[in-house]
Length: 479
Image (cartoon, rainbow, N blue to C red; front, side):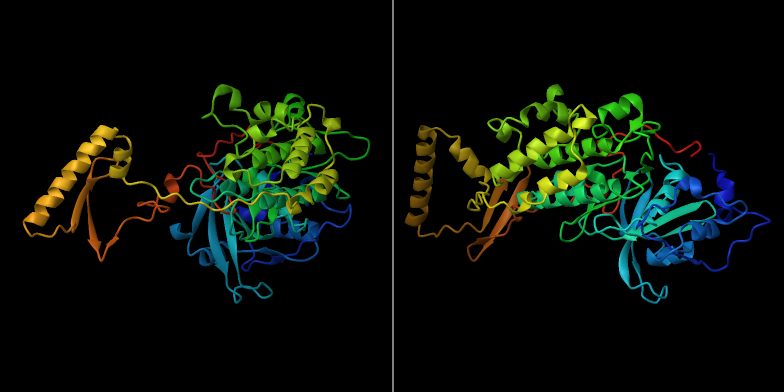
């Protein structure tokens, strides 16, 4: 069935026959508790405005319709200081909703995502988000608070998740490594989100499960976000949904790429890839590695069932601080999820049962924290000297010290002049025996957010800097 966007979004376009409502109305959304959940194809009420159309289809409780003016207030006119990042949908800004803005809406921080009209996604993905997240509610799905549709503008308002995406936490430089228990907690939470979608009375196939779409709250609880590519699962006697191939390179199931046949097992494969990323600390696709190691699944899957070789692929940033028994079970589970035969992959409910106890395993070795002070450049040069050179240098210093003592002068090293790694001359002044220098764990110059290639924006996906490559685009065409 083909939808005429001008009909559905008649309130979003200027029209002589349809006048937009002067005040935004509150659209209420029912949570998915039965098979009565509507699909995008159900949104076809001729002559109705968008607000009326969604109000009829999503009759129930708390989805808000914001005006563009309200969102400008919330984000301080989309100030650059509130910019969180930009993904395929468009830029994301942090905002704050005052409790006086809307009756019944308490004060809270939010993430506001603006559709980029020149981006890789469009009206369809925006509407898909509203329809799915307007009806689905679960502790491991990101909460959609509301949306805005004025003329050509499309915006989505989500709860704000302070720790950003799993991709950000797992791969960003200069951050502490995620502990084993936290990684398993994230994996179990994401698995629960997928299991909820698959086991609904009207199943949903997520279709874009990847590290950048898993957002984390302050306690590292995982929540699935970005439902722009989600699809209703097969119904009745159908075994799959035939659709254009969409997704991200390195995460999409091989049979889906080859045939376009979409099933819940496609999501299970993608989950196996993310679980493998959690175990190894490597991206699904990394062109910077040797050719045989660029595709994570091809490189790691043959070792997952070999307990003797498993330690070779475990994330070195864990420094051995993980449960060996838990790692074996997680690796065996990843191996099953990544099976080339879809029917051999486990259900997500089974995945949850396997992962749930892994975060509480107590056989994690606890090693002492050892901090090694980085040596000074002159000390490093001394280590490279031969014994004869060191002896000659020591003799020279002894002679110089003896000369000063004989002349009655005291030798004070008030101003040392050294060269740093770049050959520049640095003056280091000592006062009361203490030297002023940069903290060894802090960079002298903090890189700008735009310069960090591995940083992932909170409540958003990375743009051109992300290694993930979209397989295809469904921005245009009929539903």
